[in-house]
Image (cartoon, rainbow, N blue to C red; front, side):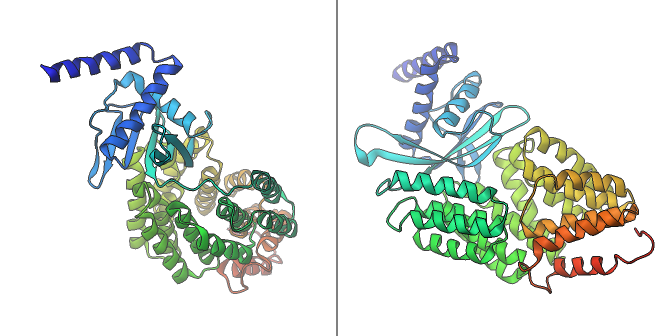
Amino acid sequence: MATRDSEAKARARWAALETRRDEHEPVMRLANMLFVTMIRSGARCVRVRSDAAPTIQQCGATGWSPLDGFEPPLRIAEPLVWRLKQMADIAVEKMLAFDATTHIVVGARPDQTHDYDVHFSRCEKGSVIVIAKAPTEPSEPYDAGRVRRAWILLSHAEDAPAREETLALVREATTLVGDGDVMRERVLLRAASICFGSGLYAEALSLLGAALSLTTNVRRRAHAERTIGAIHEDHWRLAEAKTWYARALATADGAPAPLLDAVSPALDRADVAMKEEDFETAERWLARGESMIADVFGETSAAFVGTRARRVELMRLRGEASAAERVAAEALEAAQRFALSEDADALRYELAELVHARGDAAAAVAHLRDLLRAPTRYPPRARAHVLLARSLRALGKEAEASAALRAASTLVGGILPSDHPLSLEIELELAQLDATSPYR
């Protein structure tokens, strides 16, 4: 009888919350109940969906299962996702968030604090949010004024017109926040990311090394190791890149949501395998990353769109041009719907390669012009300028092709070694500028 009474009370509680689901207070209580249930059950990671039942599942080694003691009606799920996003400071319009964190206090005792890593993705229908328990990080010492100024300087550094100005601003920002400040590692990692995107590879390596010596956060450590791997990959030091990506994968195994934190290193390994023309290995790593994202968020999610450019590239390299073009066009539409600019640009490049190869140079130019509309200092973007030059020359526009090659040379000059495949490709294209007729 007691069990029946308890079940009846639970149903009544859910019904009351469902009836008042548009009101703020019931949804807040529901979100708090989720965290309490997580703590009591010892759940490491839960997933909340707004478009399917059951909406909350527990993450385990063999997949997802219902979280005992917390099974709200489906109609409450969407406002619950909204509340969890609010708690993690994820903007309403944001389509994807893999770097959010929320902090709660259960009860009045300091030792009952808990941090949670939050992963969010919009889907074609509804949304999915994953909450993973993470170790509490110290909040002191923290110089708010200096940290705020450092973030402002880094924002200016990212938008600076020249690498020299970026470097000066980054160095000023990182000297503001001392070794004792709990925010120093985050400032260092942000500065390293800006330097990496600007082609300031030596400075990025120095900053990443300093961050790794400070951080105990598993996710930030894996991110730093991945970035070091990417620097080696950009320089075509593929063995070193694989070593660092393997480290990032091993580190991700200890992350709050290892299923998600292992995705990026797996996709990185696919990138390297494609450069090595080892398509079987590339398929294995790419399929692993795709399956992890699909298992958590589904194949109609913004997160899954992030895997599509690599899938198209692998299809193109294997000679599956027609299918690759179809997948790329569909994925580009999805990337635009989800406002994923970087993924859209990667897909535009792949489409340009595909249409250029089948002789449609005009369509290739259109894709590449869209891709290159925003200025960048990232050296590998020179590939797009080289392909643009080829397409323009195929159209008989050699003056414009020459300008595209000069832009490519500016991006890699003094940054990538002279024997780098991209540097050699630019040299070859420049040497052919005196050709008397366009070629395909």
